[in-house]
Amino acid sequence: MIVPHTTPVPGTPRTVRKAVVPAAGLGTRFLPATKATPKEMLPVVDKPAIQYVVEEAAAAGLDDVLMITGRHKRAIEDHFDQAFELEQALAAKGDAVRLDAVRDPARLADIHHIRQGDPLGLGHAVLCARRHVGDQPFAVLLGDDLIDPRETLLSRMLEVRDRHKGSVIALMEVPAEQIHLYGCAAVEPSGEDGVVRVTGLVEKPSRENAPSRYAVIGRYVLDPAVFGVLERTPPGRGGEIQLTDALQELATGGTVHGVVFDGLRYDTGDKADYLRTVVRLACARPDLGPEFVAWLKEFTAGLEDGGARRERRVA
Image (cartoon, rainbow, N blue to C red; front, side, top):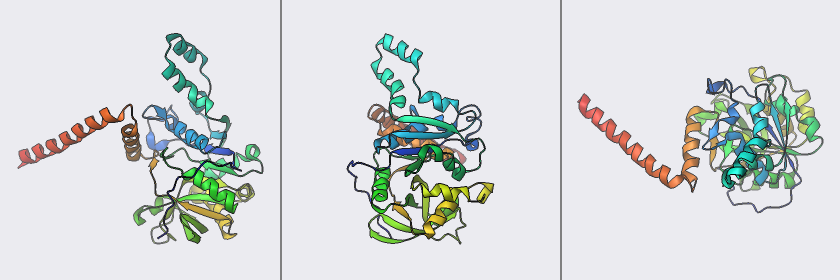
């Protein structure tokens, strides 16, 4: 068992300054809510999911964020822009709290947008960032994966990149019966707690064919060499250009490391996990948590009592 690294990482100057956030998916798992609303804009308590992702990038020192969007994603661009009329109305009311909340998204980083014309997969979305990123290393943060704001996963990955160069991916051990839902990494120890060498990658393998239980989660720090590999990577699973396939080629050259994460991660791409995310983050809020937790205890107690009463009636 590889021991995950959980010690907070102090802030240090970074060689990586740019982040790419793919946000062009259709959000079919959340229909009909996502028919006219981007899935990335679904609220998690009182902020859209994608704002948590940009806040994570900014907190790690990445002040240049490129969002890869698609058609019908204009709401994302508007959210990270200024809203002059709304700001003026709030300022006129003297509502400083809500005014700051409205202004915050636009102040997080220098945010850019380009569109992925065809939905050809995550690898293609990353390739769309090539002109913006150039020959610099960069981070990729997937909007479906939220990392709890109290965690330091991305900072840890940037630290590993600074030391080892190459690319760094985030790994999380999952039950064997779930590994088919993820990209899966073959690994070997690196001699450093919580860091492994990645020797191979497989996209969504069967349980029997999985090389490990280490799943790739939605955080990457990529060397610009990945662009050249992606250009010649043919469509793979699902007919899409898979980032996992490109990383597999880099891994065979010994230039990919993994950071093992055992902290709090929320999958907002799944309905049940989305609901759990809202509950957990609401409970952690100092302004909402105490009242909400008290109600939650009362509500769940009522469910148990109701279940007992139903059983008695059936008997």
